Image 1 (cartoon, rainbow, N blue to C red):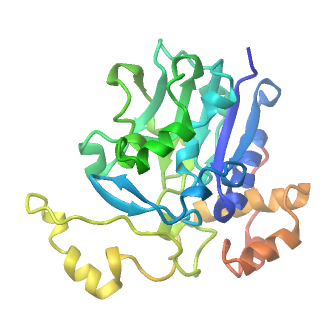
Image 2: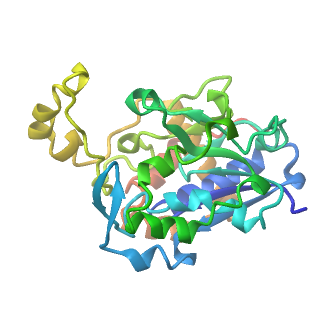
Length: 304
């Protein structure tokens, strides 16, 4: 039986976040010898690049696949069972998720026979039954049908819808267990938070001031939902999708300090070098004032 493992899936644009995420999991666990932490990178899976520019099925329509999109790593969240040989336990998280608590508690919990433990999405997607696959606890032996390259190909054959896949609507509901919100805490950092998820892309604290580099989700007008009525005006004022042209400051200074406190530890421990940071700034993967922000960020409290 393989050692339990936490996986972080990423691409070049979010690789720095993945390194910080891995560091956070190790520093904040009292049981770091009991599990592995591994990064799944798009560059190691050429089938993703091979589909560049091709249309795929998303929400019943077509979207063009862009390998260099900010979130091109998302199909890889279904990769851990294959990497584990369809045995044992795995946790998989996005690269913008950082451990505040001990991820071993999640890996070691009673799954009550479920194949997948995750929380529901919020907002309209949650009302439509979408699950948040950005953090999943997996019983790999029950997920032999997760064959990522084959499933990814089905998007382009219009046999599989991307949003139904990502929202876990392709899984039997009986196989899904409920994850407490604290294990995938959406832009909220409180005493109960175990995994902080900087899920609002426009305010990710390491991106402030950079040009937006992701494709905004299409926003469909729905007469039955009053909150959609202002979307045409927002698009006219702010651009397609109502998104600003640059990343905005995160409204919670504590979350910015948490990320940069972790990043400073990564620098101190040689996980990340200053030369790497300079290159990430040059590539617009991290805000250009990152070194200044690091200088004024208070050290994090010692791990428990």
